[in-house]
Length: 118
Image 1 (cartoon, rainbow, N blue to C red):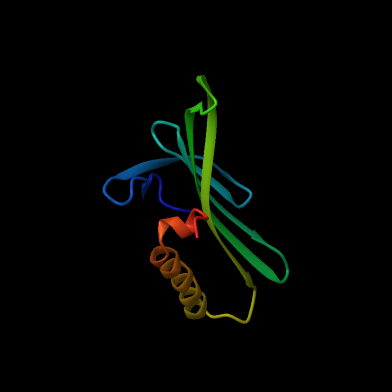
Image 2: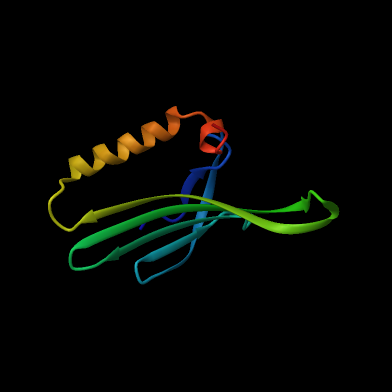
């Protein structure tokens, strides 16, 4: 569980947005931005042999239909990272290194590649 409220930068790093916890239970905590258009979800599930943690940010917006600009509809986009590990066998350092490798690669790849424009 994160602190309440918790801060996330939604605009590329210039301004932190405060997210307040709106629900918690059964391994899931949900946080909302003040305008209600962004959600942070923190989830943890465990089995006898595996532990799975998820951090997800979802942004909602209303936008015009490109084929019919008079019609607006709700849209959402999510970005998340999942850590799926065995309950034994990997140290915290090894997992931290894996997370660092993935996040470093995400930041080193151009936006065009991430958007499928290879």
